[in-house]
Length: 310
Ligand SMILES: Nc1ncnc2c1ncn2[C@@H]1O[C@H](COP(=O)(O)OP(=O)(O)OP(=O)(O)O)[C@@H](O)[C@H]1O
Image (cartoon, rainbow, N blue to C red; front, side, top):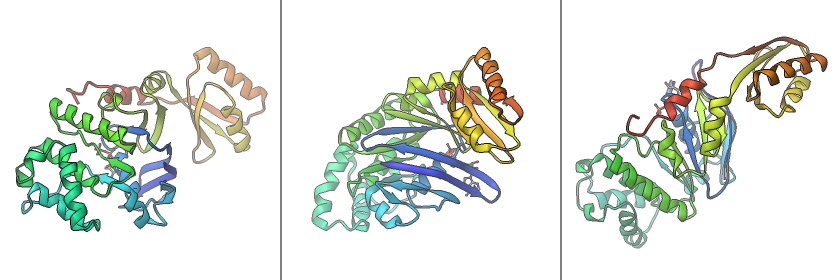
């Protein structure tokens, strides 16, 4: 289980993650999709205990990442979106080095490393220098490294980025195999079709905010249909939030600053007129009700691009 609770990260005055709430059950493959700079790597680095959040927290396998990072590290495998330089290592030595750093005995390493090389199709490269591997091979080696201690949870930051179509398919096949092994996987990409086939659920992040979650087809529908509304009230914030939450076309009501409330709306223009009327009749002290000019359409266009174009 992976859970984030109001997860917020600020870099100076810039908010990279804004009140992110995610819940991913055991055994799920969860795709985290968003444009460049949306906040994916920031989320993953917090989940991997490499960075502390500014506010909120996250739980991995029930353990709070801010309170017991050591325990979290034991159950996660993290694949960052960059690959370091390891010119002195051959493939097998590289995995051996990581196995030893995780405290695996020589015997355990001897057993597990050939299995991992087999899983990522690198058995025939065991004696090659890491720096001489192709990009796709390096990515697969990096994945093998993240699996060395048999973690329950995998956090994979753009594992298919920069790969050619064939290497992408290879990566996808390996991930499918990991899914059948029962791992909980959170995987990011800036392209929805890349994740569509292998993920049970998808979350879309934009400007540090989660703007939609669900299955791929649910997401596509939501992003196409959703408007974003901002309501300003002078008082009765809680009552107003409850009022809008009760409407079946309202999604994801969030409290903003200075008396504002923001939510997604999937009703028609007529439904929206009714909603305003009902709000007035319910004595909601609205100063304004405004439909935002959103870039949801841009997000939709960007993340649904074909993989070849991405
Ligand atoms: N150390 C940092 N200092 C300041 N700003 C940062 C820092 N790290 C990230 N950011 C900013 O935070 C935002 C989110 O970055 P993040 O790397 O999480 O995005 P991302 O969704 O992973 O993007 P990409 O797909 O390009 O990897 C970006 O605007 C980025 O410029």
